[in-house]
Image (tube, rainbow, N blue to C red):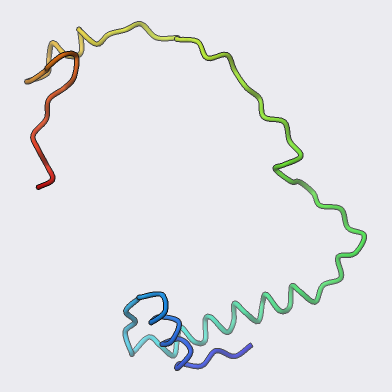
Length: 95
């Protein structure tokens, strides 16, 4: 499938992306190559071929939700410049 530079600009507009006009030809060529590869892969006959793996067929291994570390909050907060009610106080970064 051949993508034209006009189509690249239209896609960029729909995606709200700014595209440098010097790169439009290269993008058109690259996108055409990608779509050509997809077309080629769609032509492969895969009837009778079983999928190698599928995430929905697997069983999730779960572990027990157990605390494994000692509470060190007081030790760690002893070095903090400002603490209040067990929380670290930091300067405001968003206005």
